[in-house]
Amino acid sequence: MTRILLALVLALGLAGCGFHLRNKLMLPTDTAPVKVVSTAPYSELVKLLNRSLLASGAKLADEDSKEPSTQLQVLSERWGDLPIAIDSQGRAQEYSLRYAVIFIFRREDGSELVPQQVIELSRDYVSPPTDATGTTTEREILADELRREMSASIIRRIDSVVRAEIEKGGSLSAPKAKPVDGAVPAEPVPAAKH
Image (tube, rainbow, N blue to C red; front, top):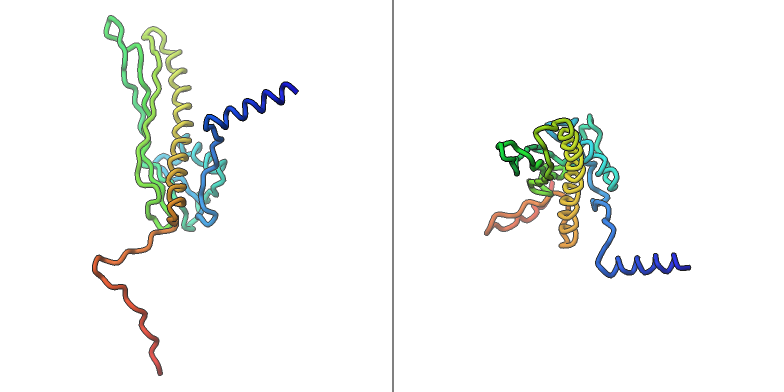
Protein backbone atom coordinates (compact mmCIF):
# COMPACT_ATOMS: atom_id res chain seq x y z
CA MET A 1 0.00 0.00 0.00
CA THR A 2 2.86 2.35 0.82
CA ARG A 3 4.48 1.70 -2.57
CA ILE A 4 1.28 2.51 -4.42
CA LEU A 5 0.84 5.70 -2.42
CA LEU A 6 4.48 6.71 -3.07
CA ALA A 7 4.10 6.02 -6.81
CA LEU A 8 0.92 8.11 -6.90
CA VAL A 9 2.62 11.02 -5.09
CA LEU A 10 5.58 10.88 -7.52
CA ALA A 11 3.26 10.79 -10.54
CA LEU A 12 1.31 13.81 -9.26
CA GLY A 13 4.56 15.63 -8.52
CA LEU A 14 5.83 15.07 -12.07
CA ALA A 15 2.52 16.15 -13.57
CA GLY A 16 2.49 19.26 -11.38
CA CYS A 17 5.96 20.38 -12.48
CA GLY A 18 5.00 20.23 -16.18
CA PHE A 19 6.89 17.03 -17.02
CA HIS A 20 5.40 15.17 -19.99
CA LEU A 21 6.66 12.19 -21.90
CA ARG A 22 7.88 13.22 -25.33
CA ASN A 23 5.42 12.32 -28.08
CA LYS A 24 6.33 10.57 -31.28
CA LEU A 25 7.24 12.59 -34.34
CA MET A 26 4.02 14.03 -35.72
CA LEU A 27 3.74 13.46 -39.46
CA PRO A 28 0.34 13.32 -41.16
CA THR A 29 -0.78 9.89 -42.32
CA ASP A 30 -0.75 10.97 -45.97
CA THR A 31 2.93 12.00 -45.80
CA ALA A 32 5.06 10.22 -48.37
CA PRO A 33 7.72 7.84 -47.04
CA VAL A 34 10.83 9.62 -45.74
CA LYS A 35 14.26 9.12 -47.27
CA VAL A 36 17.41 10.25 -45.45
CA VAL A 37 19.83 11.61 -48.05
CA SER A 38 23.42 12.49 -47.23
CA THR A 39 26.78 13.09 -48.89
CA ALA A 40 27.97 10.25 -46.62
CA PRO A 41 25.11 7.73 -47.03
CA TYR A 42 26.68 5.12 -44.73
CA SER A 43 27.53 7.47 -41.87
CA GLU A 44 26.47 6.65 -38.32
CA LEU A 45 24.24 9.73 -38.26
CA VAL A 46 22.23 8.47 -41.26
CA LYS A 47 21.77 5.09 -39.54
CA LEU A 48 20.65 6.82 -36.33
CA LEU A 49 18.23 9.10 -38.20
CA ASN A 50 16.68 6.12 -40.00
CA ARG A 51 16.26 4.31 -36.67
CA SER A 52 14.79 7.41 -35.00
CA LEU A 53 12.33 7.98 -37.84
CA LEU A 54 11.18 4.35 -37.69
CA ALA A 55 10.87 4.46 -33.91
CA SER A 56 8.79 7.62 -34.12
CA GLY A 57 6.31 6.10 -36.54
CA ALA A 58 7.48 7.46 -39.90
CA LYS A 59 7.56 5.24 -42.98
CA LEU A 60 10.97 4.98 -44.65
CA ALA A 61 11.34 5.04 -48.43
CA ASP A 62 13.23 2.23 -50.12
CA GLU A 63 16.80 3.06 -51.11
CA ASP A 64 16.24 2.19 -54.78
CA SER A 65 12.68 3.47 -55.04
CA LYS A 66 11.93 6.02 -57.77
CA GLU A 67 8.64 6.97 -56.06
CA PRO A 68 8.41 10.55 -54.77
CA SER A 69 9.45 10.74 -51.13
CA THR A 70 9.80 13.28 -48.39
CA GLN A 71 13.53 13.91 -47.92
CA LEU A 72 15.59 14.64 -44.87
CA GLN A 73 18.79 15.93 -46.45
CA VAL A 74 21.95 16.05 -44.37
CA LEU A 75 23.94 18.66 -46.29
CA SER A 76 27.02 18.73 -44.08
CA GLU A 77 28.57 17.05 -41.04
CA ARG A 78 31.59 18.72 -39.43
CA TRP A 79 33.76 17.71 -36.48
CA GLY A 80 36.34 19.81 -34.69
CA ASP A 81 38.51 19.79 -31.59
CA LEU A 82 39.12 23.18 -30.00
CA PRO A 83 41.77 23.45 -27.26
CA ILE A 84 40.27 25.19 -24.22
CA ALA A 85 43.01 24.69 -21.58
CA ILE A 86 46.80 24.42 -21.80
CA ASP A 87 49.48 23.40 -19.29
CA SER A 88 52.54 25.40 -18.23
CA GLN A 89 54.48 24.05 -21.24
CA GLY A 90 51.87 25.23 -23.74
CA ARG A 91 50.42 21.77 -24.44
CA ALA A 92 46.66 21.37 -24.74
CA GLN A 93 45.17 19.67 -21.69
CA GLU A 94 41.45 20.03 -22.36
CA TYR A 95 39.47 20.17 -25.59
CA SER A 96 35.96 20.97 -26.71
CA LEU A 97 34.69 18.39 -29.22
CA ARG A 98 32.33 20.19 -31.60
CA TYR A 99 29.84 18.59 -33.99
CA ALA A 100 27.80 20.63 -36.46
CA VAL A 101 25.20 19.38 -38.95
CA ILE A 102 23.35 21.33 -41.64
CA PHE A 103 20.06 19.77 -42.73
CA ILE A 104 16.86 20.52 -44.60
CA PHE A 105 13.54 18.62 -44.71
CA ARG A 106 11.71 18.70 -48.05
CA ARG A 107 8.22 17.73 -49.10
CA GLU A 108 7.83 15.17 -51.87
CA ASP A 109 7.56 17.93 -54.51
CA GLY A 110 10.94 19.36 -53.40
CA SER A 111 9.59 22.41 -51.54
CA GLU A 112 10.96 23.10 -48.05
CA LEU A 113 8.98 22.03 -45.02
CA VAL A 114 11.80 22.65 -42.54
CA PRO A 115 14.17 25.28 -43.98
CA GLN A 116 17.93 24.76 -43.94
CA GLN A 117 19.19 24.77 -40.34
CA VAL A 118 22.40 24.25 -38.44
CA ILE A 119 22.61 22.37 -35.16
CA GLU A 120 25.89 22.50 -33.27
CA LEU A 121 26.66 20.42 -30.20
CA SER A 122 29.81 20.25 -28.08
CA ARG A 123 31.33 18.32 -25.21
CA ASP A 124 34.50 19.03 -23.26
CA TYR A 125 37.06 16.36 -22.47
CA VAL A 126 40.42 16.21 -20.72
CA SER A 127 43.41 15.12 -22.79
CA PRO A 128 46.64 14.83 -20.82
CA PRO A 129 49.56 14.83 -23.31
CA THR A 130 51.01 11.78 -21.51
CA ASP A 131 47.92 9.52 -21.99
CA ALA A 132 46.90 9.45 -25.66
CA THR A 133 45.19 6.03 -25.43
CA GLY A 134 42.64 7.03 -22.80
CA THR A 135 41.92 10.26 -24.62
CA THR A 136 41.11 8.49 -27.88
CA THR A 137 38.64 6.18 -26.15
CA GLU A 138 36.97 9.07 -24.31
CA ARG A 139 36.71 11.07 -27.55
CA GLU A 140 35.10 8.12 -29.37
CA ILE A 141 32.55 7.70 -26.58
CA LEU A 142 31.74 11.42 -26.70
CA ALA A 143 31.44 11.31 -30.50
CA ASP A 144 28.91 8.45 -30.29
CA GLU A 145 26.97 10.39 -27.65
CA LEU A 146 26.96 13.53 -29.81
CA ARG A 147 25.70 11.58 -32.85
CA ARG A 148 22.79 10.17 -30.83
CA GLU A 149 21.97 13.61 -29.45
CA MET A 150 22.23 15.15 -32.94
CA SER A 151 19.76 12.61 -34.34
CA ALA A 152 17.30 13.36 -31.53
CA SER A 153 17.75 17.14 -32.02
CA ILE A 154 17.03 16.92 -35.76
CA ILE A 155 13.89 14.84 -35.15
CA ARG A 156 12.71 17.36 -32.50
CA ARG A 157 13.25 20.29 -34.90
CA ILE A 158 11.24 18.58 -37.63
CA ASP A 159 8.52 17.70 -35.14
CA SER A 160 8.25 21.25 -33.79
CA VAL A 161 7.89 22.73 -37.30
CA VAL A 162 5.28 20.13 -38.30
CA ARG A 163 3.27 20.69 -35.10
CA ALA A 164 3.39 24.48 -35.57
CA GLU A 165 2.13 24.10 -39.17
CA ILE A 166 -0.73 21.88 -38.04
CA GLU A 167 -1.67 24.17 -35.12
CA LYS A 168 -1.91 27.24 -37.33
CA GLY A 169 -4.08 25.29 -39.76
CA GLY A 170 -1.49 25.05 -42.49
CA SER A 171 -1.03 22.12 -44.76
CA LEU A 172 2.05 19.97 -44.99
CA SER A 173 1.43 19.39 -48.67
CA ALA A 174 3.13 21.61 -51.21
CA PRO A 175 2.16 25.28 -51.00
CA LYS A 176 -0.13 26.55 -53.75
CA ALA A 177 1.19 29.22 -56.10
CA LYS A 178 0.09 32.71 -55.09
CA PRO A 179 -1.17 35.18 -57.69
CA VAL A 180 1.09 38.10 -58.53
CA ASP A 181 0.13 41.30 -56.68
CA GLY A 182 -2.67 43.08 -58.51
CA ALA A 183 -3.38 40.11 -60.75
CA VAL A 184 -6.96 38.94 -61.05
CA PRO A 185 -7.45 35.17 -60.90
CA ALA A 186 -8.49 33.78 -64.27
CA GLU A 187 -12.06 32.62 -64.65
CA PRO A 188 -12.70 29.18 -66.02
CA VAL A 189 -13.07 29.10 -69.82
CA PRO A 190 -16.42 27.65 -70.91
CA ALA A 191 -16.27 24.52 -73.00
CA ALA A 192 -16.64 25.05 -76.75
CA LYS A 193 -20.04 24.13 -78.20
CA HIS A 194 -20.22 22.16 -81.44
